[in-house]
Amino acid sequence: MLIVGGGQAGFQVAASLRADGYDGPIRLIGAERHPPYQRPPLSKGLLLGKMDRARLLFRQPSFYPAQAIELRLGERVDAIDRGARTVATSTGDVLRYDRLVLATGTRVRPLAVPGAELDGVVYLRTIDDCDELARRVGEARRVVVVGGGFIGLEVAAAIRLLGKPVTVLEAAGRLMGRVVAPVISGFFADLHRGRGVEIVLDARIASLAGEAGRVRAVVMADGTRHEADLVVVGIGVLPNVELAQAAGLHCENGIVVDPHGRTSDPAIFAAGECTSHPNRFAGGFARLESVQNAVDQAKAVAAAILGRPEPYDEVPWFWSDQYEVKLQMVGISAGHDRQVVRGDPAQGRFSVLYFQEARLLAIDSVNRPGDHMTGRKLLTAGSPVSTSQAADETFELKTLLPA
Image 1 (cartoon, rainbow, N blue to C red):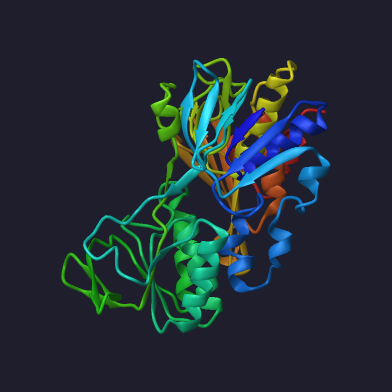
Image 2 (tube, rainbow, N blue to C red):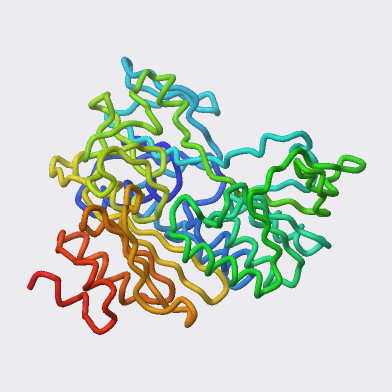
């Protein structure tokens, strides 16, 4: 068993195989030098210095030899020979596999403007990135965050809590506009502005200006300059599909897999953010960037490998922590034709329920964990919910759950 990728999905495949009785050799190859670890805390607790690095690890290093899982860290797989069932690695080794799992994840989307190569322009994806960002924040006088999505706003919140001035530049007309309702975008814009963050919407970056090779400002298309000696870019990620493409596997917005994680080659599986999979909640194929997707899809892959196939059919859920506010999302709201607000945004506790032709698609909750947990159960069961029930605060949504 050969697993390529040392992130959440790769770790979960290995751990699930062992837990479910697989007794053959397992090799887990990771490009980073660190044992598999959680990524969400990088933009939250770890950046703020509130989380110990040891707690970031999924398991302590002793877990892997105890489970007879061979960890090969700081190593890449450069090529797959499907005919010979071998892979070539960056160390020059050629390794054989009976089953291969690609859990290659994603990489940051680069900022494509002149000056993006200047010193002081950074991204956040790995532990090493987080260490570098924390060091630079300590030295910075003015920080600009490019991107008003989850990562950008979480980083902006952390940097503001560390006492540094922050400007957020978002190319769209509202924050997190791709995934949340306008009322939630407005709530978080007010939240950040209330903490002293400058928010610039419809931001068009022309270039980054520097001096002696170091970034000094972000220059906008209208000539406006935002002074900065540290620019943090958070404008999304790209799936790592090049290895699969070079091997001739079917790729389209990710490595295309079936509900069991099988690729177009029956000996090769894939799991996590690098995959495009059939998802009934999305109404077609979807590529999801979440812990839930990585864990549940990896478990389905392990089950299929062990000959006990259980299709991946879990309701998607996501979260974001910014300051003391928790945003929890369940379902996929794309294609909705109506929104219902439950609760009072002015009180900082509310949910937005998304409907399409009277069918509940998704729920986004701000500081209302009960709505989120009920929503996960409602969507999993496919329980009908009317818009009038959703809007009525006195109506208990959990009464709609099957007995």
